[in-house]
Length: 270
Image (cartoon, rainbow, N blue to C red; front, side, top):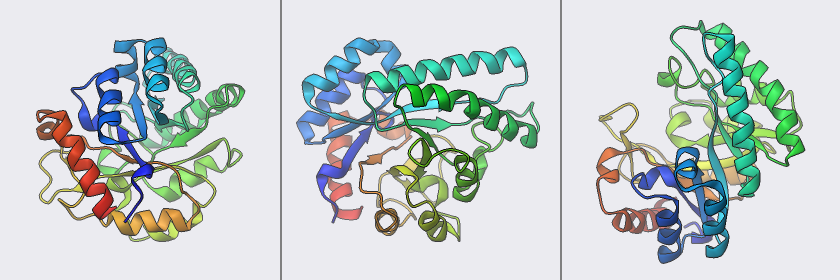
């Protein structure tokens, strides 16, 4: 059983709540940390978000998301770099543990070229993040997203990209939804020791109802979240554990009921 003090609510799990509602929900349910999404920060305003979090005494485990470096034109790529600078500013203001990177992909860009764009984008972003004291967390996504969301698709590949930078500046965000299938996952987690900046849990429903909005609550699918939690701890990660569930049925449900279930399943199954 994992200590409830490790739990962080990723705001995506209660998509219909704004930042203030999510913060207040965490307080009601005894959740000590929260991960905020940038579109929700924009809706509320950064200064107000900082105040909500600080007044509630919550810890910010991450800001989601930076990245999306891949685009077919140089102008679009430059706009995305500029937006990543803003993301760093937001993470710094919220004193987040890391800025999560979903690096991007495009059906208009060959995958080899896309990965070069990601590498080039990081080279511009990391010095800015360093200056502002923000850690960059690369999140490998399941290969089914390689055409439209991320061309970083395995822990091994993400480690290779992170290795160009100091371990305290660029690391990995490990989400069980994305790597649970990998027969080398446990070996790669061990290799990632010292570069694990975040750990996310949910479940893989069988059959999956939707590629994007089909994640399950822990215990409703095939993922051994407890086993992976033990593995990341053995690799030295003892920080917040985010519950991040993209699921339309959950979003349409009462947020307090969802959060109560998160707390119950987390303590029993993670």
